[in-house]
Length: 254
Image 1 (cartoon, helix red, strand yellow):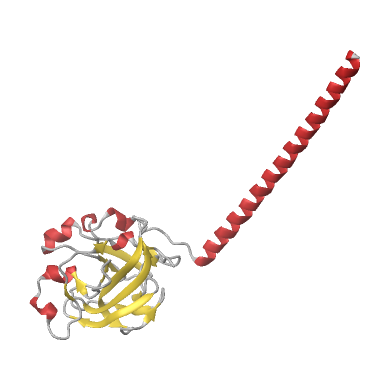
Image 2 (cartoon, rainbow, N blue to C red; image 1 turned 90 degrees about the horizontal axis):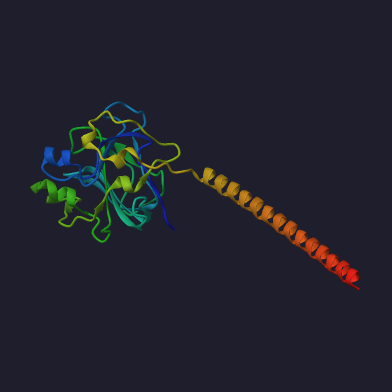
């Protein structure tokens, strides 16, 4: 069954978008995900990172490049830009703590951990999506850092050389109880789509909308039936009038 993924933080602001030119100019390598935060730029209250949808935890633990990370595979994910539906790898990085283990299944809203600063210098969550689910632990973000320590013993992420990432802003929705706060950072760090994450209706609203549309459809069907019945009656009456006129004409002629 197709699923639409939601933002992993209840309230957050965008810090940096997918493959922005500004990021490349500053760091010397591409940014293969998005950076969002509920802390950096102003405290928004809830720093818990939650699962964006239903999936399976592939790995969870410490990584020299990503800090405390959780790697998930989400199945049948809808891309609202292209309309495609496919399985995706999701990598959540720089967590302060982790609440899940490898092999666990999660659903939308399952707590994965808490936003933090592990293996980075500022509070934020780095989230990236990739279509190559066969090799979920190979990240081009790690490869781009060219850090010899990233393949040290006990490390989770490996240096991926093939880029199959997709823009998270083309995947994510803003859930019914979520809010994306206006960014306090320069716009050149973001892409236009980062400021236009679509809203996802909750199930109750969706059911209510479907019920309303069904009622409107039934009302329209009934209006058409009444109109068709009235038209049929009018045609019958017209036919009867024409028949009587013919009879009168015949009587006059005789």
